[in-house]
Image (cartoon, rainbow, N blue to C red):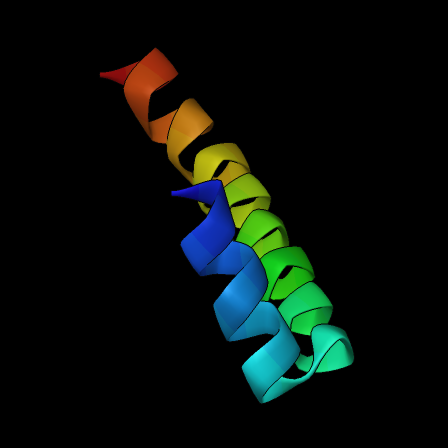
Amino acid sequence: MLSTVLASASGMGLPFVAIGLLWTFYMLTVWHRHRQPAQRTA
């Protein structure tokens, strides 16, 4: 699995993959923070 990720990274361009991973991590963090108060009140 790691080899396929590295192959796609070298094919698409490493900066693009890095930005994609950072964006995904950022969106997951924002979504989790936005969901926490709703879960706490419910």
